Amino acid sequence: MKHRLSRHLSRMGLSVGEQSGQLVVWTAVMLPLFLSVIGLAADGGIAFGARRELQNVADSAARAGAMQVDQRVYRESSGATVVLDQAVAREVAAQYVSSQRAALVATIAAERQQVVVQVGRDMPTSFLRLVGINTMRITATARASVRYGVERSNR
Image 1 (cartoon, one colour):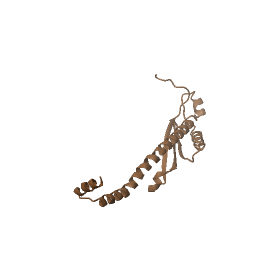
Image 2: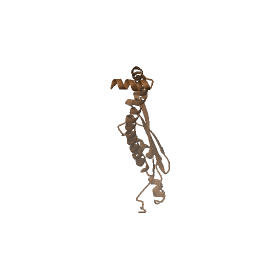
Image 3: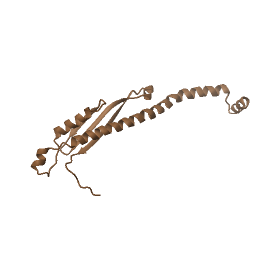
Image 4: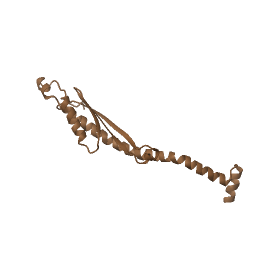
């Protein structure tokens, strides 16, 4: 078998020694690429899960803030005008974010009719450290509009 392989390689202009040398060079060149792809797949999957968790936090914080209706305006308009108590909405949303177990950086904006919450954190990587990427920044943004009472469904 070895003799047949040598003859075949000889016809192609290669010797057995040249072939194994090319394999070592090919392996040395391709190994970092393969490690990067594996790292991207592994750390990417973890990042998608972490982003989903961050999105849940942002959604919940925005909803909690959007429930803070300015009662004075609502009563003075006999229920016709529903606006946010912006200071309380920001405070409630910030309390919700700070109650989460992860150290999160949050930006909270409250307007008359909506609350916008953006949360983010740095996530350490595992495999991507091999190519010099130690952390990944993950962010999520959510908007919630003020609502009061029960709305009629069109179903």
